[in-house]
Image (cartoon, rainbow, N blue to C red; front, side):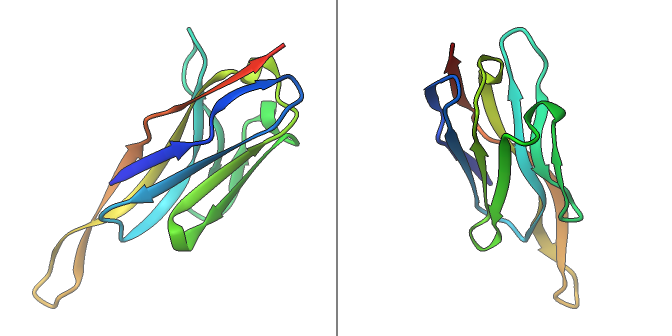
Length: 128
């Protein structure tokens, strides 16, 4: 399975960007999917995600400015980022846990395995 992220770039303070991530490959279903980011010298942190139960979690630092949405038919998530600040500068990574068919039982029931995947990252730079 591949997570392909797009939409990063350079923007001025106060500007907006929209990130998209598409999951493709052997996917039975997706348990959760969202975005993390990692700034230089810092640990990777959660930005926004759809949880297993379909709820949404945001980092406190982005609440009210970022909005996550999804297109379940296309296995995609989007992150609309408004009112960007220099401290939002980071590499943004798409993250998902999905179920993959790894076999079938004697009754033809699919055997599933949960796998966590990461995209390649897309750079967001906010200039002051």
